[in-house]
Length: 262
Image (cartoon, rainbow, N blue to C red):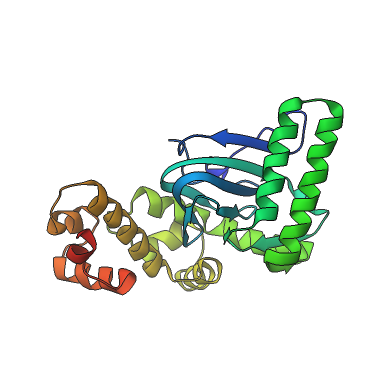
């Protein structure tokens, strides 16, 4: 990928499998991507993560799967969780995307076994880590695969994602300001028509719909965490008309902003 400011370089240390324990949502869980497939297993609490254009809400016992090269970020959470990174090499030249949220005792057991063996750091234990990782990957492929790609198809899919990364980053940084499709196409170095087609094929919705979605998500956070009035929140989230904000909010949340706050 050429958008290295969104890229996270994940050190693998001695073992190609990296597993980290977290006791709260990291402050630096901002928008980024990496080649590894990431598995988040929640031991306690709750977490909300955005993967591409999907919002994933998870509770204790759930697993969130972040597919390789997928833009993602932590939105909110009060949780204790384990983060497991699975490198592309472990999939042996096959490319998969998986369901984003699952609950499975087999995955839980293998994540905990990897955690236990990784702490030992003996050569035999590192080999066991690889074994449990392969069992976990096999289970994911057999039960939770959404798409399978050949290398050529995967590279084409990846190239499409790369082309709209500048636009995604711009939307994140300027979500509350006026954003024109013309400008997004310009910074993405493509015609407006082709940009609109490519954005929707990658994100599953138009750029305008995506911008509205991000504004509503930010408005929801403000409704939950501030005492600002609904009108003040609408203005701060880039809606110049409170009635329009209410209509858009109802479309996405099936209730009014004031009812949601109650």
